[in-house]
Image 1 (cartoon, rainbow, N blue to C red):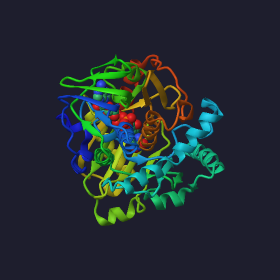
Image 2 (image 1 turned 120 degrees about the vertical axis):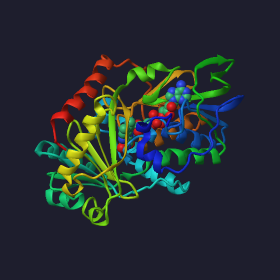
Image 3 (image 1 turned 90 degrees about the vertical axis):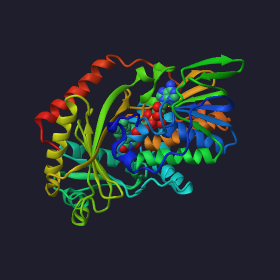
Length: 427
Ligand SMILES: Cc1cc2nc3c(=O)[nH]c(=O)nc-3n(C[C@H](O)[C@H](O)[C@H](O)COP(=O)(O)OP(=O)(O)OC[C@H]3O[C@@H](n4cnc5c(N)ncnc54)[C@H](O)[C@@H]3O)c2cc1C
C-alpha cells in the first residue's frame, strides 16, 4: 500500500479487493463520524449503521492500512497479561467485565464473519502458545489454571502432544486455546468495510482528519477536500495515529513486528507441520509466531522492523530459525515480507479515553487487536447510539499519558531485535 511492498506483504496479495472508498470531496452531515478504518473503526461503523445512525468513516490512507492489515492474524482470547492481573489492575468491576468480553471476543469475530459472509480465510481451530523451556511451561501452567478457573476451554499439552500438533520437538509443551483461531487480517478489514457500507455507512480513504473544531453542539472534522459534521466522533486511529489526536500516539510505545510468508508448502509438509492449522507463538521475550494461510504458506514472524540493516538481518534469521524448527523447510523461498508497529501501553492493557465531549477512543491493544478491536468498536457504537453509558464500558475513562522515554524504548526494541537475530539462530 502507498507504494510500499513491505507494508502489507502477503495479505495485500491475497485479500479480496477493497470496496470502493473514494476521497471525501464534499461536506457531509451525519450522526457519527469515525476516524480510522481498521477493526475498531469499521466494527464501530457496522454496528452504528445497523443501529440506525448515519455514519461516515475517514481514513488518511486506505481500509486496513494500520495494524489491521499487517498483523499475524491470530484471533486471540484475552490479553497478554495473566487473566487474574486484569481485576488486580482495573479493580473487580472493570477487570471482570473486560475478561468476560475479551474471553468471548474470538467468538464475536467468527460470528460476524459468518453473518456477513466475509471471505477472510477463517480457521476457528484454536491457537497454541508454545513453551520454549521449563520457565515458559510454568507460565503456561499458571495461565491454564487461571483460565480454567473461569471455565475457559484451554488445555496444557505435554511435550509429545505439542510435538504431534506442531510438527517439531522444539517445545516442551503448549497451551491449546480452543476459543481462538486465525484469519487473513486485511481480508477481514476489507470485509468489515463492505458490511458497514451495505448497512449504510459511508467510507472514505485518502481522507485524513486534519483538525476537529466545535460547531454548535456538533463537531466539524476537516479533511484536505471536504468536511464532516457529526454529533459524535469515534477516534479509532490507535498506533497509526496521525494528528489531530497526537496524545493517542504519544501514549503508545511502538514495537515493530515482521512476517515472512513461505511459498505454499507441498502436501507432505502440510500434513507434517501444524496438521490442525492452529496459529502459534512462543514464550520467548523476543517471541516468534507462525501459522498457515489458506494456500498452505507458512507465515513466520518475530520482533523487528524490515528497514535499513533490519531487512537482511531478520530475513537471514527467519531462514535459519525456520530451518531449525522445521528442517524440511531449509532453503524454502519467501513469497512475501512485511512489518508493522504494535502499540504497547505501560501496563499492557488497552485504554478508553474521552478526548472531548462526545469524542471517544479505544487504543493500546498490545498486539491483541483483532478480537478486542472488533468488540471495542461495537462498544463505541453502542455508546454513541445511547444504548449504553460510559459506566457500562469494559474500561474506565482515563486521561492519555505520554509514555516516558518512548523514543528510547522504541530504538531499543528495534536495535535489540536486530542484535538478537544477528547473533542467534534461536527460533
Ligand atoms: C505486525 C503486527 C502483528 C500483530 N499481530 C496480531 C495478532 O496476531 N493478533 C491480534 O489480535 N493483533 C495483532 N496485532 C495488533 C492488531 O493488528 C491491532 O491492535 C489492530 O489492528 C488495531 O486496530 P485499530 O482499528 O484499532 O487500528 P489500526 O488498524 O491501526 O487503524 C488505524 C487507522 O487510522 C488511520 N488514521 C490515523 N490517523 C488518521 C487521521 N488523522 N485521519 C484519518 N485516518 C487516520 C490509519 O491510516 C489506520 O488505517 C498486530 C499488530 C501488528 C502491527
